[in-house]
Image (cartoon, rainbow, N blue to C red; front, side, top):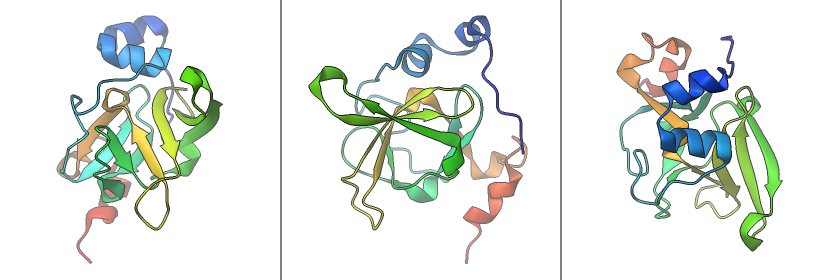
Amino acid sequence: MKNYTKPSDAELRQKLTPLQYEVTQNEGTEPPHRNEYWNNQEEGLYVDIVSGEPLFSSKEKFNSSCGWASFDRPLEAENFVERSDNKYGMRRVEVRSKHADSHLGHVFDDGPTETGIRYCMNSAALRFIPVDELEAEGYGEYLSLFKDN
């Protein structure tokens, strides 16, 4: 098990783009359909851009037509914290990473798969690691997810 930690604020400001910082640290939201992963079709893992915590596999990604990366289940449920979000006159469930406390997005109960769940994530909160880079990036234990059955 890796040690997933949150860097200092000074390190985050140096490491992250202004949008990544705004989304992860200030609960911001990026524009729909104009973000890096909303339409990514490549196989691999999505990890917290702040700590590297594994969050989602491309196997659980689907096109929800909402303009953000959508998944029907987490890869590692223990890396998530959910909390009530009543901002903007809406009742939603915010999703944060457990170890870095990064704001990731929201979860809804309107997913189209058997889970009925839609994790609607900000690309700015994620880092995508393609399958062929998993081993080199330290995520080799997840390679079996992508083996042909």
